[in-house]
Image (cartoon, rainbow, N blue to C red; front, side, top):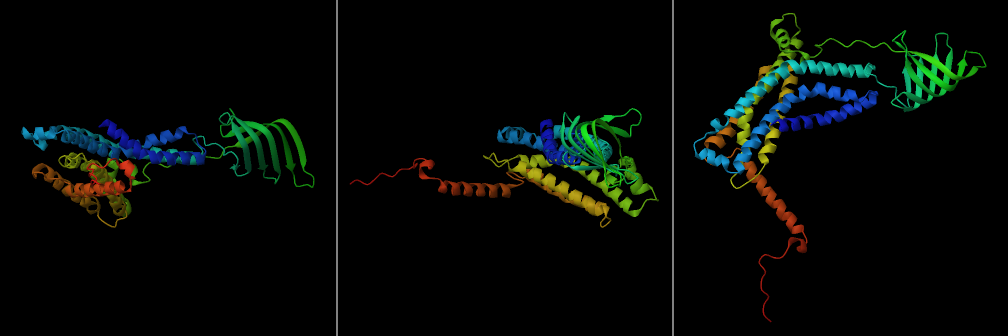
Length: 396
C-alpha cells in the first residue's frame, strides 16, 4: 500500500515539478528551491494520494485473491466480506486520522510556506540571479547586461553597464570580465568588480570623457524587498480552529469570508469522510467476472475517485462565491457517490454472481474482440500462420 501511495503521489507531483522548473528558470532562481517548493506541496497532494493509495492497495489485494480463486475458498468456508474487511478498515481508520491532521493543520501551513517561497523567488530574496544575455534593471537607475556566466556565476564575461545619477550624468561602462562581491559595511550594497574595460562619461558637454581601467569597483544598491504578507490571505491557509471561528463564531466577519470558510471546512471534511467508502469501492471493483483477468475495475476506480475530487473542488468554488449552500454543494455529491458505492458493494456481496460493472465488462470484452478481429483481417496471410483446418485438395 505504501508503494501505491508513493506512486500516486509521484504521478500527481510530476506535472507540477515540470512547471516549477520552468518558473524557477524564468525567474533565474537556484534549482534547489524547486525541491523545497515541491516539499511544501506534498501535504496538498498527499490528501488525494492517501485515498487513492488506500483504494488501490485494497483493490489489488482482493483482485489477487479473486483471480487465484482463494476468495472463493474463503467465501465457501463462511467468511463474509465484512469479516475480510476488518483489517482494511483498521488501516483506513489510521489513514483517516493522518489525513485529518494533513488537511486541517499541516496543509494550510505548508501552503502558506509555498506561497512565501514563490513571493521571495519573484522578489529576488532567494538568490534570483541576473539573467544572462538580457538587460537587467537595478535600483531604477542602472541597466546591466552580461554576455556569459561561468563558475556558477562567480565569473562574468562581457559586461556592459549604463548608470545615471541625479545630475543627469550617464556612465557607459564596458568590461572584459567581472564578479560580484559582498560588503561587510552595508548588506544592502554589493560591489561589481570589473576588469579590463572602458568608462565613457557623458556630462552633457559636447565631448564625453573616456577612461580606461584595469580594475574598477562599481557599487550597486540592492532593491528593497517587501515583507511577505501574514498567513490567512485565503481560506485554504486557515487551520481548523480558525475555520470554525470565522465560519460560525465571529460576528464581525464579512459574509463572503464566512461563506469561504464554511465551504473550505466542508470540502476538507467531506474529503476525509469519503475515505470510509474506499474499502467498499475496492471490493466492488476488485472482483472480475469468472474465468476473466480483466483489470477494468482498477481503471474505473481511479476515474471515480479523481472525478469525485474534481466535483468537490467545483462545489467548493461555487459555495465560496455564496451561490449555493456548502452543505448542498458538497454533501449532495457525497450522498450520490455513497449510494452508488453501496449499491455496487451490494451487487458483489449479496447478489449471487453479481457484478458491479458487469455491463462495462461485457461491453469492453466485445470491443476488444472486435478490435482483435479487425487487426487479424489486416495481417498478411504469412503472419497469421497456417490454416488450422486445411481442406484436402480434390483428386485429379
